[in-house]
Length: 249
Length: 308
Image (cartoon, each protein chain N blue to C red):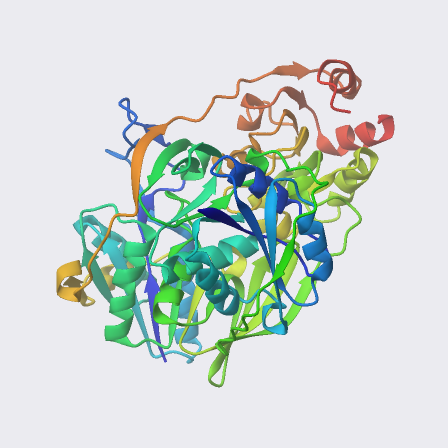
């Protein structure tokens, strides 16, 4: 079995988000970047399936500028075998990313595609579902457990109010939720080894994919600030304030 | 052209998130159709017909839609959707699962999780865990949108719209339903509750969440948790409040033993009144709380429960 994982370069989980003064976008200059946490979970799951003997090869793909090779190398250091970068300097919308990934899938013919349920920058939660539609494949979104069976994969999904188990025919697309696994830290020898693993670079043109703009970003503003209130000294005072001042109980 | 709204339901009752989505839709256009796709769901269609502002209910009642499998339902919606200017669904786990698939089938983009409507094609949505608000203009002829329920009032009921049957049976055979475990609770649903009390890593273990449940029951509220509490295995993920979990905006939000990581604040900072109980007075949660109490939660929460 061959597994394709998609990884996105995003702002680091702990970095502070600043909006540009001209409200054109978020300012990412001099900001620490990292692999999207949900994508990291996807890589970890694929590597575990390989370690368990269920998969033979794990290919990590990223769509983005040259700098996203860092995140592909991070995936290789976690245990992926080789990387593919779809090089573009444009900040692509989900459907365009899905179209590029669909062409990579057609070329690579993986049996399973694992990706994050959402990226922590755009918070869209779209690409996996869109890719499934473009390839007419089944989708197992928000997965908290994956069980491979003969010709099928069972996915336990996090849904509102509980869990749902679906059976999907292969090839299938799975998007990860938080509890699927806890990604390992890459060891120094594995980080060194990752530098020598193969990394191919393709472009939207060489993939033959035509991209289209679906929306226009008009402005980006900081959210309404919430100011700190007061400290109360006792539970009694808290109840009194909630009753008589805030009037919420 | 009319607007198609996808009803959220469990084949028995119409879920409240649908009503908030109808309010958002009414800010984009006049002629609103509500699609109920499910199995043995006539009751849901009857409820849908009572929603104010709806001019027609479409009922696709077929066993292939029983479990809202994305492969079948997205095909149905995309086939119906070509006749509409907008397709809207609540940003629930079901809406998030199905709607992007619809968008790709129609070769249009999706605008996720909108919190405000500026015009029929321009919308606001939070990005970067709510640390920035983007204003986006859709360039597509069919606008596919998910709606954050807490950002819009619920539409009222009392209408009597006609119900039209949709006779389309679409089955992909790509996916099959195996089982479902839905937690049974007498408490209100997290995203619809007027009061939410959430616990964080400071709770220490899953047993101490009983303390929060007791307060929730006194106030008729729901219990939530931070990602740290979920990661530590204290509680299941479906009660996680935050960027990667549920977005809530109750009248009263009580954060107990929660430090206030950005990703948690993204899920609750639109609450009307925020109370923080934490023994660490430096915890960032105090910077957004209307009322802060620096105290040991294991003393303060039982006292609170007793005195309410």
